[in-house]
Amino acid sequence: MNHTAYLILENGRVFTARRFGAAAETIGELVFTTAMTGYLETLTDPSYYGQIVVQTFPLIGNYGVIPADFESVRPFLRAYIVREWCHDPSNFRCEGELDGYLKKQGIIGLYDIDTRELTKIIREFGVCNAMIANDIQNMDVKLEKIRAWRVENAVNAVSVSALAGEDTDGQLCAGKRVALWDFGAKGSIQKQLEANGCHVRVFDAASTADQILAYAPDGVMLSNGPGDPAENTGIIAELKKLSDSGRPIFGICLGHQLLALAQGASTEKLKYGHRGANQPVRDTLTGRVYITSQNHGYAVTPSTLPPNACERYKNANDGTCEGIDYSDMPAFSVQFHPEASAGPLDTSFLFKRFIELMDEYAKKGDA
Image (cartoon, rainbow, N blue to C red; front, side, top):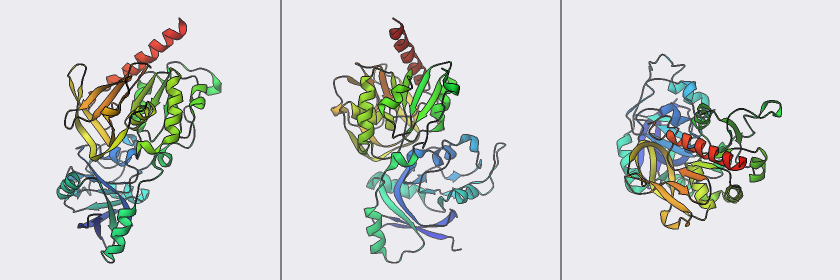
C-alpha cells in the first residue's frame, strides 16, 4: 500500500502526509483542537460529525485506546490529523493502539504533517473544506468537489435511534427524572447527571415536546451536537413548546444555541470556532473567570437576545456569548462543556444548579 496521502485545502494549498488508520479518501470541514489530553474523547465526540480534526498537540496516541473514556459508541469525524503518531502506547488502562482502532472504525489518519502551519492557515483563512486524496491529479475537479461539499443532516446522523434509560416495569424511579434530549450527546453528560442522583431517559432528536412531557420529567437536558443550529427548524419549534411548559431546562453547547433560537435569538458561524480544553469564560455576574472545555463552530449573537434573556457568561478571549440565564422560565444554558471530559472541572457546579432548579420546580408543584 502507498502510505503517502495528500491533504488538499479549498484554497488550493496541498500538504503531503503519511497515512495511518483506514486507507481511503474523504472530504470534510477542516478544524483544529488545542486540547493537550483527551484525544479519545475528541475522537468519539459526536459534535465532530463531518469534520477533519487537526490535533495541535504534537504527540498523539501515547496512552493508547481506552474504551471507558469514549464519549459515544464510535467516531463520527471524517478524518484525524496529527503531527506525530505514537506507535507504542504505554498506560495501565490501555486496551489497544490508535492505528488499529482507526482502521476498525474506518477513520482515516494522517501524520508527519505540519499541524502548526495547518492551524495558522485555519486561524487566518477560517474554517475551510479539505480533501484527503491518494494523488493530486485533476486538481480542478478535486477543488470543485471540495468547495461544493457541505455538512448535512448532522444532528439526525448522530442522535440515538431509540429511547434509553426507561423505567423498569413502568415504576417511578428514585431521584430526579431527567429527559436528555440527544442531539449528539457526549456520554459524560449522562454520567454527570447520574452522579448527581438523577435518573436519565434519553430521547432522540426527532422526539416531540409532547413525547418528552409525557415522561413527566423533573427537568430537561438539551445536549451538545454538530452542525448549524439554525438548520434544525423542527427541533426549534418543539423546543419552543417545551419552554412554554415551565419545566426546568439546562442546555449545553448546541442545546444552548437551540434554546436561544427557540426564544427568538440568532446564531452566527465563527471564523474558526472554539475547540479545546483551555477556553477562558467570564461570569458577568461575579467577574470570576473559569477555564472550560469547548467544541463549537457557531455562537449565539448577543445583540439578538430577547428581553427575557441575560448573557451570563462571555468568552474572555473574543467576547462571544458563552451562557444565558432566562428570567421568565426556569432555564439556563452554556456554550461550554461543564461535564469537561476531557478537560477542566471548573464549571461542574452547573449540574448542581440544575438540580436546585428542579427542586424549586417540585416545591411549586407541591404548594
